[in-house]
Length: 341
Image 1: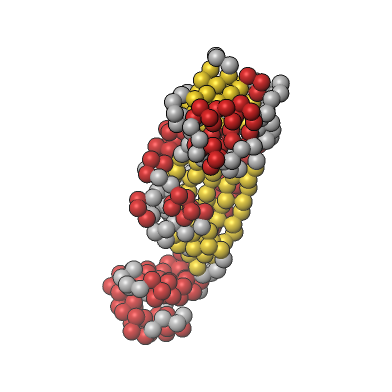
Image 2 (image 1 turned 90 degrees about the vertical axis):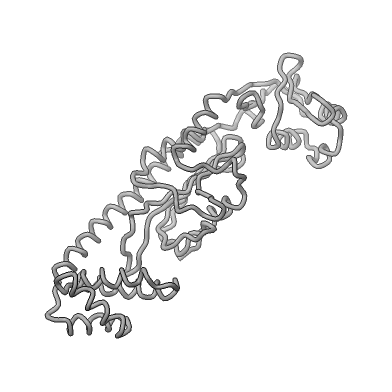
């Protein structure tokens, strides 16, 4: 089993304005970003950094266009000019503009300058192929039936993030719990993208047992990854994302059907009397006192079946304070349910 920490890293790296309360809110944000975006193809021979005041630079093409930059696009401009960003930040804007005038490469291959609301978000060469966050979310929403954000984490983190540099989405099926080899798992996945070259586009699907307040995914199995760089065929990744989620959903539904059949059998498997029910429960490792209480609770519910005993023990487990004891009992309950297979 693996412990997946991608969502936890996002939780601690995101500012409050990058956290969204729902998938719909994140989707609306990404759609608005796309509608307000534009791509300018600028000639390197005419490109320069223009000082707006003593501390502010803009990206300009001759006298025709002047666009303010954010931190990411300014870093890209520094890499393009092969100058140290920390050094440039120590200079006045006028001095920095003269440094760029000396160091920016020239040529006739245009650069694509990506803007949102008139601000430069990224600077790339012609080979970069942009995939909008909204396109990725559309693929997710098209395939992820029944999935939603995980329980809120530390400081109200939702697992749904969108910022100037990238998007990250953490979804689970809160009703998708099924039994795998006597232990309970639910399906989930991470999906991510960057419109500005900050990271790849991709998805990671998995089955998990627990999610903590720091959004660490504990005891994950069947972990599957797909990721692509933003090159010519990057849009093919949208089909890979849909396929990965469809496989997760298909396995969830198949396992649900199998689990439903086990529950149906468990409802029909009746013990001869309370003594047989007690002995069977104790054989799974559950203590005699707890087994006796479970038998009494099951008798109050009606027939003494495997399912009624499982139901009684599950209800009693939920009242146990310590997670370690609760998990141990839950595993023993899984062994009891397995008798109906």
